[in-house]
Length: 84
Image (tube, rainbow, N blue to C red; front, side, top):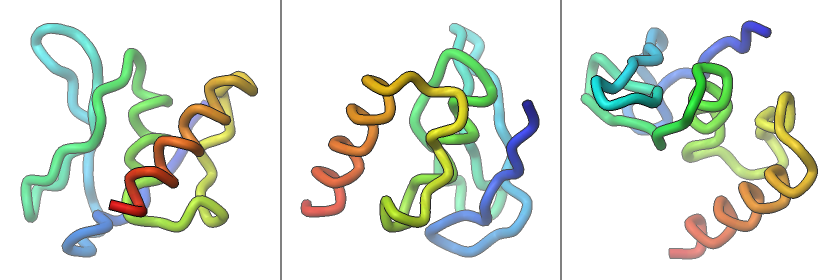
Protein backbone atom coordinates (compact mmCIF):
# COMPACT_ATOMS: atom_id res chain seq x y z
CA UNK A 1 0.00 0.00 0.00
CA UNK A 2 1.36 3.42 -0.94
CA UNK A 3 0.02 6.38 1.09
CA UNK A 4 0.97 9.88 -0.04
CA UNK A 5 2.64 12.13 2.53
CA UNK A 6 0.89 15.34 3.50
CA UNK A 7 2.95 18.55 3.56
CA UNK A 8 4.84 19.42 6.73
CA UNK A 9 2.26 20.57 9.30
CA UNK A 10 4.71 23.13 10.67
CA UNK A 11 6.28 24.86 7.66
CA UNK A 12 4.12 23.60 4.78
CA UNK A 13 7.01 22.04 2.83
CA UNK A 14 5.37 19.82 0.21
CA UNK A 15 8.03 17.12 -0.17
CA UNK A 16 8.68 15.51 3.23
CA UNK A 17 10.27 12.06 3.19
CA UNK A 18 10.09 8.84 5.18
CA UNK A 19 13.55 8.04 6.51
CA UNK A 20 14.94 4.93 8.20
CA UNK A 21 16.76 4.99 11.54
CA UNK A 22 20.07 3.17 11.75
CA UNK A 23 18.78 1.40 14.85
CA UNK A 24 15.53 0.34 13.13
CA UNK A 25 12.23 1.99 12.51
CA UNK A 26 10.98 4.71 10.18
CA UNK A 27 9.86 8.31 10.61
CA UNK A 28 8.59 11.24 8.57
CA UNK A 29 11.13 14.02 8.07
CA UNK A 30 10.86 17.56 6.69
CA UNK A 31 13.87 18.64 4.65
CA UNK A 32 12.95 22.29 5.14
CA UNK A 33 12.41 22.77 8.90
CA UNK A 34 13.97 19.44 10.01
CA UNK A 35 10.88 18.29 11.89
CA UNK A 36 10.76 14.54 12.59
CA UNK A 37 7.59 12.53 13.04
CA UNK A 38 7.00 9.65 15.45
CA UNK A 39 9.04 6.47 14.94
CA UNK A 40 7.19 3.45 13.57
CA UNK A 41 8.11 -0.14 12.71
CA UNK A 42 7.26 0.20 9.01
CA UNK A 43 7.02 2.88 6.30
CA UNK A 44 3.23 2.73 6.04
CA UNK A 45 2.69 3.36 9.75
CA UNK A 46 5.33 6.13 9.75
CA UNK A 47 3.48 7.74 6.85
CA UNK A 48 0.14 7.45 8.66
CA UNK A 49 1.63 8.97 11.82
CA UNK A 50 3.23 11.82 9.85
CA UNK A 51 -0.06 12.54 8.14
CA UNK A 52 -1.84 12.93 11.50
CA UNK A 53 0.55 15.55 12.92
CA UNK A 54 -1.01 18.97 13.27
CA UNK A 55 -4.30 17.96 11.63
CA UNK A 56 -7.62 17.56 13.43
CA UNK A 57 -8.49 13.88 14.05
CA UNK A 58 -11.52 14.04 11.76
CA UNK A 59 -9.25 14.95 8.80
CA UNK A 60 -6.82 12.08 9.35
CA UNK A 61 -6.55 9.07 7.09
CA UNK A 62 -4.38 7.01 9.47
CA UNK A 63 -7.00 4.30 9.85
CA UNK A 64 -5.69 2.39 6.81
CA UNK A 65 -3.67 -0.63 7.93
CA UNK A 66 -4.26 -0.28 11.68
CA UNK A 67 -6.29 -2.63 13.86
CA UNK A 68 -9.29 -1.27 15.77
CA UNK A 69 -7.38 -1.10 19.11
CA UNK A 70 -4.48 0.67 17.35
CA UNK A 71 -6.89 3.15 15.76
CA UNK A 72 -8.48 3.89 19.12
CA UNK A 73 -5.13 4.27 20.88
CA UNK A 74 -3.80 6.58 18.19
CA UNK A 75 -6.98 8.67 18.25
CA UNK A 76 -6.74 9.03 22.06
CA UNK A 77 -3.07 10.00 21.79
CA UNK A 78 -3.76 12.63 19.13
CA UNK A 79 -6.63 14.10 21.16
CA UNK A 80 -4.50 14.22 24.33
CA UNK A 81 -1.61 15.87 22.52
CA UNK A 82 -3.88 18.45 20.86
CA UNK A 83 -5.07 19.55 24.32
CA UNK A 84 -1.56 20.35 25.57
